[in-house]
Each structure stands twice: as structure tokens, then as C-alpha cells.
Image: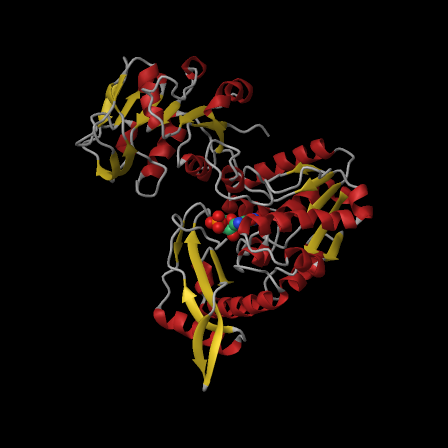
Length: 508
Ligand code: XMP
């Protein structure tokens, strides 16, 4: 089915992917497009509406990022921050440099009744800008202001052009969702025709077209992403698909067995398990640098396949569960590169398989919805995200079988207590990490000199930002006592209080 598209043109803004997410939450399909590719994209994809994102540059710079406004003259457009300034500048208004940057929460003045900003019942908005619009283009009206921002919003109802200086997509603008909803449904003619079932229908069709009569290898980890990929393949090209599970020894306690059981029982009988514990431990020997570990782990996945020549030779595609945040963080868009995710950038050049990534446009919660619509169990669909390199990025310093065992045992205790207390339901990710320092302790009458475990538990919406979970002290104390008493090799337990940013969710 052909569904309507909202194109979010990205000018390098920090929140652009959040705009896409918010639009999709309303049941409207949306894609993020770097401004350099906007022209080709608009001509080819014919969006129903366009949103211009914020960005770090100034529209006053001679080579400022821009697009050809003729292309969108007949479309409903919402410009946000830099997007509003660009619209003002291109349609005959004026933008000026401010002496000071306006950043943080602001209260809007009165909103003109009946205009787009009139949907904001709460006057609180989030601002983050230097330049500002000083004169609106002909045909536009100013619809609200703040003390320091004379054009906090503007619109030209007859041409369906709207601009806001603040960010409706962030939660700091409490009623921002209502504004986006009003733009989409009242002004841009969106029908809200994007559902998990539409995504499934489109994806099954496109997998069949891409794969044809060829064969697909699907590396599965037991996590929700690769399980959903495997289910999509099963439904579309099932008889041409082989699922491969590489047991690298870096999973959580009991997970390898669990993966095997749920996988063979639930939906795909064609599963090969490769036991690669010795290979991974021997290749990881002596390696302590995080990115190097990721590289070694990524390469060894492929080496595993190569060692199973019969499997490799008879397949043409490798299906991966890459998600939209991975694509964005790996620098495929204009946002800058932060870490190498092995399932996007770490694959060696010599790999011969063609890669298909059916989930590369989805956020995690959307993958879960798709999984549910495909009939996967809650055990699979609600599993916490787990990094491809597994405990490799949760064990600081060298990864050895002994250190993996310590981490697995501590992690098991932590998560068992989370399950028992029901706290796991409100947590995005939780784990125990092992540090590569030692400290002195005392147990019984003995002096100990052992390693510390760090507990990490975060809430998050999409892993782009995260906050430490606010446990009661007694809970943490109880878990710490159990770990120190039950896990040999640990004499201290710490709790990581840092949010992302400035930290990341994983320790490496
Ligand atoms: P960070 O640590 O960057 O993690 O805040 C964000 C999300 O990504 C997961 N993560 C990874 N996933 N390969 C993966 O497949 C990796 O190398 C990797 N590193 C981090 C992490 O668990 C969190 O959900």
C-alpha cells in the first residue's frame, strides 16, 4: 500500500530524529533526509508534507545549508528553529543575529486564536537558538512572541507555511505533540495511515523483490531486532533463509540455551548454532581497547561463517537487525559519528555477502510493535536491548572466561532482584559491568584484593538519551550484599548515576 510521507529535511539538528519519531507516533510515515539530498528526494518521493529541522549553522552565513523553496511551494511546510529562519529568509522576511543565545525553557506570550500555536494550552516551550526572525515574509502573520524573541512563531495559512522558533518535538515543550498533530492532521491533510501492519506488508514485498530466488543468512542473537528480522524473512522468503546463532560466550547467563529453545520452538526451524567460545576468547586475548574489541568481535562473527563454508557458499545475502538510531549514530546522516556499531560499520570490506537491513528505518519501540503484530511472544519482544559485542563491552580490560563468569553471575543476581521486585518493567537496560581495577577489602578475617562490579540501570525512550534509574538505597544495598557474598572475585559494588549524555549507556 502506498502511504503518505512526511519528509523531515535535516539541517544537522540535534533533535531531527526525534521529529521523525514524533510524526510516526501519530501514525504518519516519516523519513529524515539530509538537506543535500532534499531535491532528489522530494522529486522522487513526493511527500505530502515537509518539516524543516533545526541546525547548528546560521542562515546568515554565505554557504548556509538550504534547499530550493520552489520545490516545496505547493506543500504544507513546518519550519522548526533554523527551519523557520530559513523559511523567513527565502520567502522575503528578515533574519538577524542576536547578541545573546536563547537557550532553555521560555514562556510564550499570547497566541493568536485559531492559529497553529493556539493548540498549545501550556505556554512553556524549549528554545535553543542564536539568530532570530525580525520581519516575517509577505502574507505571513506573527502568531506569538516571547520577551526576547519577537517572532516565536509565524504562519501563512493560505499557503500552509508555518514556522516555530521553539522545539515542539522535545518533551520540555509539554504540548509540543499537540502542535505537531494539528499541523499534520488539520493543515497538512495527513490521514495517519502508517501502522505496523503497513510496515510489515511493505517490507515482506520488498524483501521478496530484493532477494528473488537467492538465499539469505540471518545472524540471530535472540534479541528483539534480529528475531523480528528472522520472522520477517520467515514470512517472506522462509524456505530460502538460514538463521545462524553464533555462541561467542559473551551472552548473559543462560541466554544461549534460551535463544536456542525459543527460536526453534517459536518460529523458525532452520537454525544453525555455531559454538565459537574458544575462537572468540583466543582472538580477544590481550585486547583491552574498546573499539579494537568491537572490531575483533565483528570480524570473528564473519570468520565463523567462513569457517562454515557450506553455509557461506550457498548464501547471497546477510540480513541484519540494524535500527535507525544505529544508522544515525554511525554518521550515515549529517549527525556526527559517536561509536562504531558493529552491525553497521565494523564489517570487513572483504565480506562477500550483500547486506539487507529491513529495520533500518525503525526505532526500537516500533520494532517491538512490529514483532507483536507478527505474533512473537512477549519474552522475545520485550527483551532488553543487548549490544552485539555482548559482555565484551561490559568487561573493561581483557575479556577472559573467568572475567565473563564473574560478570554473568553478578548480572544474574542484579536482574533476578529486578524481576522479583517488578522494577524491571520501568527500566530500559540494566546490567552489571566489571571494571579493570582492584581494591582492598576484608571478608571474614581475610584481606581481599579484588575487582569492583558497577551496576547500571537506565530509563530511556530510544537509547539516544538516558537517565539513571532512581533505586531506593535499600534495594541497591541488598543487591550489593548478594553480589559480594555470592560471586567470587568481587569485593565492591558501585552504582552508576550518570545520564546520557554526558556518559553513554554502555561502559565501552
Ligand atoms: P551507548 O552505549 O552508545 O548505547 O549509549 C546505545 C545503545 O546501543 C547499544 N550498543 C550497541 N549495540 N553494538 C550493538 O549492537 C554495539 O557495539 C553497541 N554499543 C552500544 C547499547 O546497549 C544501547 O542500547
